Image (tube, rainbow, N blue to C red; front, side, top):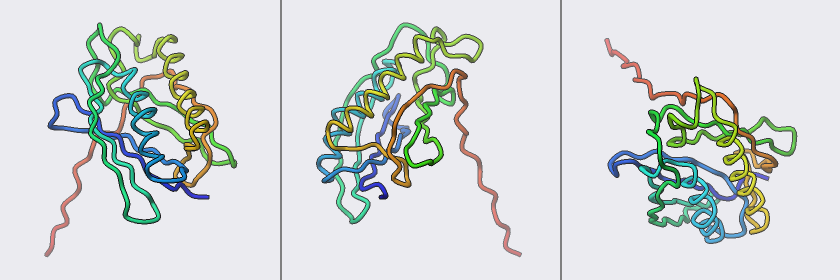
Length: 180
């Protein structure tokens, strides 16, 4: 069974440039998915982020039709005390899925700081905290009737953080096609 809803969560530092994380869920209604996005997913993304960053909006789209719900938010990152690294330095969360599918994964920006990594390796405390957050999200989704799934609809089972700081791929310029 494929996902029923797509959740897009928008984050920013300055308010003029944004990045998003996209999630897929199986929910009974788009409103149930939106409630889950606003009360569970958005705070989970904000908790480990530096306090300079904010979660500003969720967009939940029902995949079968054109219905959607947009909710403005203003959730500040929950971490402070050390300068954050450039946003291409990310925490990679690997998520095991049911059904013999490939692991799903998410890149979390705004989490890596000078203090919580050493030579490109995340501190074990940060890893444990992020593991707990995402395993809690999976459990809360199941309890709320909003199952977290990958794009093929495979149920999320267990999340674990990769120790090495990851570098999210930077946008590449597209080659221009010359017309003779």
